[in-house]
Length: 335
Image 1 (cartoon, rainbow, N blue to C red):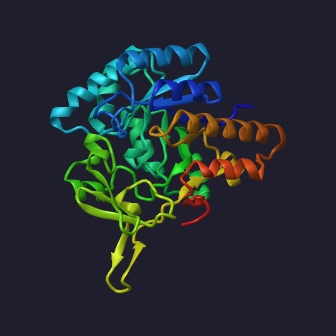
Image 2: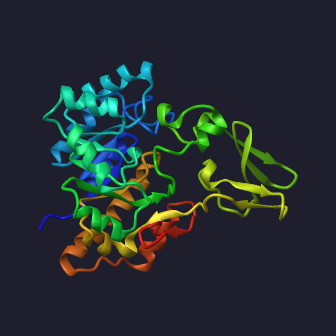
């Protein structure tokens, strides 16, 4: 029986090695620059590092997927196409793309190569997925985090395209690729230049007299934390804003929860998914090592026993990697 794949993140070479060595079947990564949507300083790979990463993974018989999933404007399109050339030239097992111009370039230049549809394309129904398969030859779709398990099971019966779903990480409830909250605040497109709530716009301001920490994006206050509160990753959708009616700060759009499907992993596998995706290219090598190890154990146990329960200590430790944020199943169990 073919096991569901574990697709792990890597923001640098040590993280890639940690993913491969601890049981990932595939690793996804990106070039430094504007061609992928985790364009953070000191993150991602040079061409030389990609070469080393692919060689290392292939020696261990693991796959490497390169994300080229930004939406380039006219002047950025040549850069995206150049990144495609480099990815396939260096031996990537697949390119993960979203923009139709990039997908068209791949289809015309590399018709025999494998391409996956990025979550940024927001393809959440069978008609959309089949459109990309017919016109661009996609072999896999990464589903947005807005579908229930029942909806995923129904999709499985309506398309022969492989299905990849998120299993762990910070939760985005918006249709990926369609959110403009960060762009509204910063006037810089996250879908073109590669980062929601880009660090260059973020300021941390300490109020010494009260010990209050303010987090601002381009001068807009996203949140205020007391010294005893856990600090969440600063994105506009998870901001805590002032309510004039109550005079209090509250999460107006989304609570800062973290997706963790370990408790329902058998249901997700049984829905017919082909790959389990772990979010976190911006996270540390230690994070990648530990979460991959937990999911490897859980999935192997499922295929051996029909259950993938992990110990309470393991579950608590896994949750501690998310800055203390509350776990959630997201939309998988209902909207």
